[in-house]
Image (cartoon, rainbow, N blue to C red; front, side):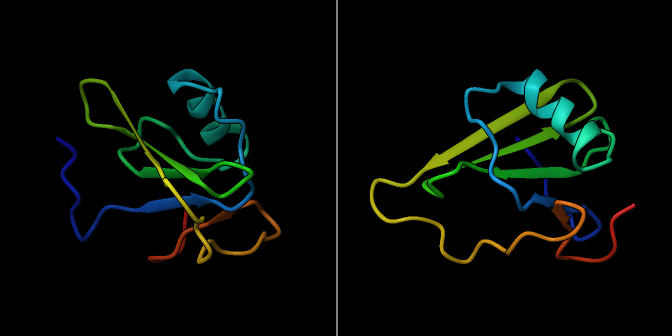
Length: 95
């Protein structure tokens, strides 16, 4: 179970990603695009190009969790617009 605490940082990748990627591919994006350590315990949230599916990656100290939500209809309209660094940390500054 992923325990979300008030101190946990949530990193949103504002650019869509290829959802054929698994844990290793998303962890690589955390390093290269989001400039964050995938082992940090942050929640990393990714969206596909059609905005119909979301993946969350998190390391809990023992291994990675990867969760996916796929909408049966519609899409995620609230997703933030692209930024200059490709990442948005909605709950405080990212490191």
